[in-house]
Length: 306
Image (cartoon, rainbow, N blue to C red; front, top):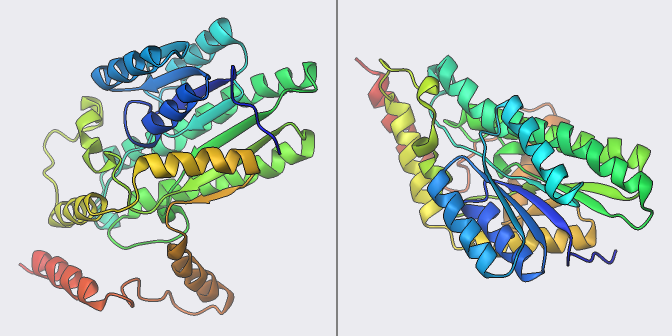
């Protein structure tokens, strides 16, 4: 499929850092109109200035993607400025770890709000606009990319809230792909499933709203361990956000649905699917690196012994 990005409009959530910022940079280089969305004003301002300096037409909006009213206002602003977008990158995401029963209601609401409801709002608001544009113009081509994670295809321990949110994004996007194929040949979808890549998600607590914080609650030992392990894994990643962003654009051009940052990690997905097919108990996620499992188990058991 030949995709012409020049002059087309892209909406990018989480555009102030990580994949969103790197996709915006590619979009600017390709001559696209960019709708930059982030909840962190200083990062958004910096990104907008960079893209404008690169010659892009930019609409920048500070938006909490979990908020329906704010997302609806964003959609109206996009339509008024550029019309229906051609590309939507539902990329904004936050991370959280810890034993699954130790996550508070606020933890669940915050992570599912951004990671799941943010994607839901992006899909429900922009897809109808894109379908309307496709119906009016036979040459219109559109694509929606939702950012999930390898945690949407696996279930690593001590990451329960995050895993649940990303499995939801994979399911939503697979269904979106099938639903779109029923009604149009002009719009498709992809799901991005990155492994550990330095994007800033390990510091996402910086943007957690105060009303999503338990004032009296202190992080549990498992949550502190999860945060430390994630920061270490993300920080040591050899694949950059810029490399992954290029993979995203290549996948759009190839109409490729599943986008992976670390194709070798698919072996773990195959093991999980074989567990399901054979109805066997889940395989030890640390089978290839048993020392990590021993360390995590020892740390968690030590923290629960009074």
